[in-house]
Image (tube, rainbow over all chains, first blue to last red; front, side, top):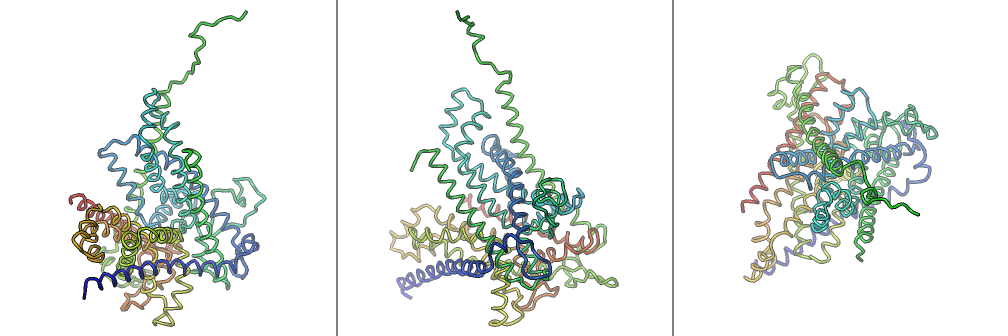
Length: 295
Length: 307
């Protein structure tokens, strides 16, 4: 075969591959949205789910997902930023830093089901809490921490050296420089990273199966006492999230309208993740413009 | 008349020294780093000891566990604790999905960097990012409601099969492979490309003879990271693979992997029973495999540095 023909053929193959990738995504989105929008209604979003009868909604699951996400981020963000600051500013090249890097690498490559098992062992059985939102949030923290640390470290390393040196030259201490100079200018990237990580956490299910459980107690949304059994705000109650709900109705559910419920829930889940992604880009670039006064 | 204070009294004074904040801040961030190390060590120790219990406490033979194909933990008279079919299933879907996803992912990366660097990247990059964003249960659900009936009617078998699991996983690991491969190829020095073109090579010859060999260690890293993800994926596979305890004889047979058996049985076995403990041992295998993948990636990146 002539080398020119081979070149054209190869180009054709690469275009075909790119088309296949785009087609996969288009097909997935088409399926999710066409089937999902039929089933999303205000009633679907605001009625509780049903275990046996058709017509259940996803109100509690949606609330649980958002609430677990909130608690997770409440723990992850400070820890992750702290870890990131340590890696970027304080860690000296050496054995300890290598060890921490290895730990981050291990944590980020652990399958989420393994993190779920660890959560079951420690946060559910050893502590005796049973399935709780807090246990789920801690498991998700382990799952999310490496991403957060990396994002922060990269964001801090991307801050121009001049800024830091100017601040230190003014006689400001290291920690004060970090607090008042470095963190503010790294803030847009950290925020973008945090929102992207939130999108990932929102869709996570395997780590929550054995930590936050497959059930939700009957919730009373007028009860705002966080220590009451029926309060949605109680962090020591079991909580089934949206992603877990999709899995459980498909594999263990008895309801007749599995298709409808799960396609509706899947669409809600994907739309939420999309919103997280778009918000991350938008907020990131907006703050970047504000801070740097660039167009 | 105003009384004039001496200068030293007019200075604003704070009782706290800046250096207090300095050491407190350092302490806080070091604490964060320590938490990360201890989490990793705790996971290893807890899952390690728990995973070994079925061998030490319940007397299951490690050899039988790893090599027997008889999985029948509920049979009181003659229980079998062989997980070979699940280990086989895990490796089979991992390798097969990498086999499908690697050419697609690397091809997509080459399309983005070499064929259409300007608009190709603008189109394909967001596509890949969106694919990453779709949660794994959604992949599982679509596999279950579209792919399973499709394969049952058009290819054969029950629909729940190794093949279905492979396809779902291949789509899931595609973005991982594409992203890393794109970075690897676009970070190659441009003189490689230009030198090859200057010698009169066509684009395909340049890609095949120059760029792919030069980026090989990174491309392998991309594939291995994809495989690590496939090996540990639980719910999506569990929904489409069928979860039977036999060794599959064909690609259309239903099968099971380590993760799917853990997902399925962890909830309804009694904590501390032999069956439950063997599930923890399977979890230990997953943990060890994830260490193995890391070591493999380290080995590859050290090779990359030597060049």
